[in-house]
Length: 397
Image (cartoon, rainbow, N blue to C red):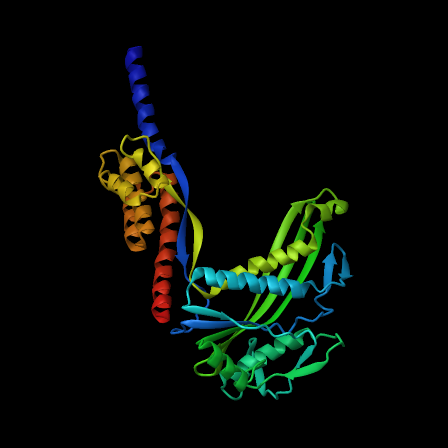
């Protein structure tokens, strides 16, 4: 074989391989999607009243302790009280931002700094697999008993109380008259009450791997009341842990490597407050998606169109190439059509396009196989989310 023909065959082989390698040309883009709330708020609640009602506001010696490496420090500052206000403020801000309810009424806060909460209710229950089973099948009483167990788990030994408040057997920190006044003054359907907040923090050091860690555990308890039916409908106790890790050569460098305790606790409260709002209601989240780029004359235009948010125009170009004789171009175009459909709020059509894109190469191209499988998993979850969102928005209308 003459050298020229050898060179020509080698060139063509490289060209074919390059056609397959174009599937490595991907770009990432940040998009915003609506994610459903994870906590099921009963339907038909259009208006909500929210109250800061933290019964753990006074200095609690248990929560004033913090760990530092191998020791325990008893703090003098009541950082919990500041953190609870940061948490509540961030929760309110996020609830208003998402604009899910017709109206949100912020109630005047209750000051428990000099009030001791006590419970004299006589509960007759047994515990089975961690669940409280009252002899009387009464949801309100179960909720009150759960809240009672929480506040009595870490009793405040502070002796500076000036008065006492007793838990109502049906409404906890409220009574029927107080709830009725809230309903009348706000015309709200639902009351969300932050009835308990606490945090614990500590700094730890692993000398073997020179890792400094700062941990903040936030515990919050919200009680939900139906103001139309005058019922204590749900108690939601949530614990979250926020962690910071940094390299530190030795113990002496630990504090310098990590954020100050004050900043860490308040930052954790801020993060968790927003997170709980997201658990309750549908919200926007920024996520990252991948799409295929190409040097193909027509497909190359779509990069600029995507930057400008012109998805329909880009989709026209991709759709014109889904049956391109060049398999790489066809696979890319079908995959990108899936992304365009998701951007238009149609995950089912998006899933169909990604499946078609997958079958262009099947398992013959591992990279494309992995890309398709990852996106199919994402779109499967999006389909489920859309069903939940439809129900949540139908319920709220």
